[in-house]
Length: 165
Image 1 (cartoon, rainbow, N blue to C red):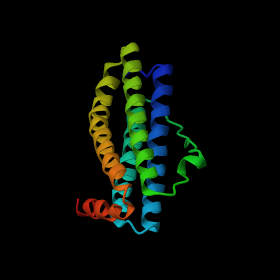
Image 2: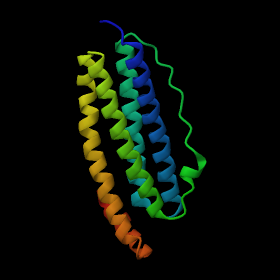
Image 3: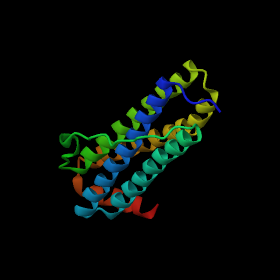
Image 4: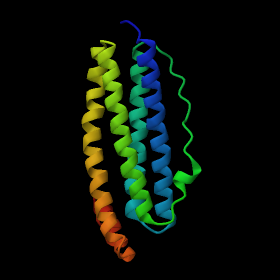
């Protein structure tokens, strides 16, 4: 099987870094919620962290199958991005990150098409489909959080709702 083009390889490595960075960010969100006595949110973001890590690992495995040894360096998250004071701020961060990840995956699929690498396009389809669902879920949680933010004690209700899932 031919190796990836340089442009596509670099784009896949960048996406892999983004997936691992999202995993780390969501792990922090999980810890923030646990620290602030929101066990449902903590469990939710812990699961999101694991999912993003798995996505990064799947990209690494794909690169190995395509005969590349990936060097994946973690992306730094700006400290100010993680300076949360209220639950609503985490939901804004989460929704924005999921939207940005969709844009990144969509761009990556475009590069695959430009490079006529249909195997990579097929590989990315799973991620794109999942990302549509993730964006919808993040947007739904943000909308609830936005309403609950008017009466912050109601966040415990949303936390309880997520704990049941």
